[in-house]
Amino acid sequence: MAETFIVSLDQGTTSSRCVIFDHNGVSRAIAQTEITQYYPETGWVEQDPLEIYQTQIDVMKEAIELLNINPSQIEAIGITNQRETTVIWDKRTGKPIYNAIVWQCRRTADRIETLKKEGLESYIQNTTGLIADAYFSGTKIEWILDHVEGSRELAKEGHLLFGTIETWLLWKLTQGNVHASDYTNASRTMLFDIHKLTWDQKLLDLFDIPLCMLPSVYPSSYQFGEIDESILGVRIPVTGIAGDQQAALFGQCCFHSGDVKNTYGTGCFLLMNIGKEAIISKQGLITTIAAGDSTDVEYALEGSVFIGGAVVQWLRDELKLINNASASESHALSVEDTQGVYLVPAFVGLGAPYWNPYARGMIVGATRGTNQSHIIRAALESIAFQVNDVVNAMERESGFNVNALKVDGGASLNNFLMQFQSNVSQNFVFRTKCAETTALGVAFLAGLKVGYWKDHKEIEKNWNLDIVFTPKINKDETDELLYNWHRAVDTALYWANYKKS
Ligand code: ADP
View 1: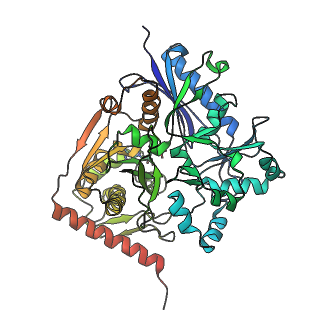
View 2: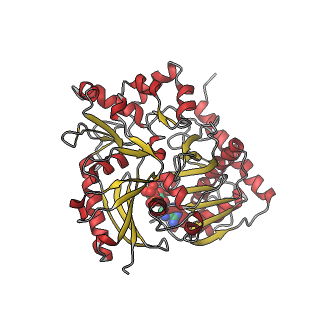
View 3: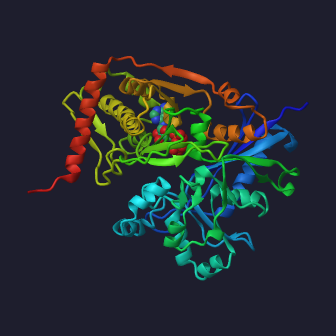
C-alpha cells in the first residue's frame, strides 16, 4: 500500500506555508510563500484575503509536487493560522467586502479605550478570558461594518459572513459549503463565551454583529468538511483546525496541566495547559481554549513577551554589533558574564506581568570595561529573564509548579540562550527536533480524527527530543541574577513614571 500523509496548511502573518508530515511526525516536504502586507495608515495593517487563499493553495500544490505523491495519499488536512485577523465576505459572491484586518492593526485602539471607560473590561475578561484590546476580532468586525457602506444592512439580511483566517480558508476550500471555526480561534474574537462555549449575545449586541454572520464552532479535532474536488482532483477531509499558538502547544504534546511551551520568535509566546478550569488572570495573562477533540475543553494561560528575538535583530540592524543572529551565541560565550550589565528591552513597553506601555529600553550597570560581548550577552539574557517572569506569573496564578519548558522558534536554536533559560528558571528546557511544531500540532489534531494516529500516547512517541538543558548554576546564583534583573526593570519603570517634582 502507498504511504499516506497528513497535510498542514500553516497560514501565518508573514507567509503561507504547507508542511506534509508522515506517520513518524517527520516533515517530508515544505513549501512557503510570503504574503503582501498593506499599511494604509500609521498603525494599520491589512492583507488581501484572496491572496491568502491563493498562496495557500499554491504552496499546497507545490509541497505535493515536491514530495511527488498523489493527492489520494493524503489522509487529512489540518489548518493552523495567524489568529484574530478578521475577514468579512459576501456569501453570494465569495468576495471580501474589505481587506483582512490583521491582528497587529491598532485602528480600533480608541474604541477599546471607550469600552474600558464604560466599565466593560471585567465583563469582557470574565466572559472571553481576554484583556480588552484592539488585537482581537470584535472591534475589527465592528469597524468594517461601520465603514463599508451598506454592510450593516447586508449583514442583517444574512448576506455577510465573518471569519478569522481558518474559517475563510475552510469556506473557500469547501466552495462555500462549510462556515465553521474551532474553539481555539473563536476564543480570540472577544465575542465568545469560553465557559459556555457559545457566542455571547451581550457582546454581539454591543458591537451590533448579527449572530447569522458567525461560524459554527467545534473542537479542534473534528470532521469539518471536505475540500472540493476541483482543487486537487479528490475530496480530502479537513479534520484539524487550531490557532497557531494553541497548535504549537499541542504539537509540543503539552497534554497535562502545568505543561508549558515557549516559542522564541520575534516575540515570545508562552502557553500553559491549565486543565478544565478556566482561571481568569489578575496579572495580565490571557485565558484561552486549548486545542482538543472534545466539547469538554481544556484551557490554557497565555502570556507574551513583546521583544524576544527582536532584541537580537536590534543588535544586528541598529547597533550593528553582529552580522547575523546566530553570531550572538559565540559573543555571549566569549565572556564569563555580563560584568554586571543588564539590558531591559522595553522598546514597546513591557508586557506581563508589568504592563507598562510607557516603559522604554535601558542598559544599566555599564563600566569602563564593558564591551560589545557583554552587551550582546545581556541582550540574550534579557530574553530569558522576561520569559522567566511570565513563567513565574503563570505559576502564581495557576498553582502549578513548572519544572520543564518545551521550546521552539528561531531563537531557541541559540544554545547559550537555552542554557541560560534553564539556569534562571531552574527548570529543564526541552528542545524538540521538529522546527515546525505549529504545523505538526494541527497535523496531530487532523490525524487523530481520521485514525492516522490512535491517541495521545502514540502522538507522544512522535515528539522527538533534540537536547535537554539542565540548570548549571545553583539557586543562590540564580537568585542573585534575578534580584539584579528586577532591579533593572524597576529602574526602567522608574524612568517611565518619573515626574519632576
Ligand atoms: P517569527 O516566527 O516571529 O518570524 P522565528 O521563529 O523565525 O520568528 O525566529 C526569528 C527570531 O529569532 C528573530 O527575531 C531572530 O533575531 C531570532 N533568532 C534567530 N536565530 C537566532 C539565534 N541563533 N540566536 C538568537 N536569536 C535568533
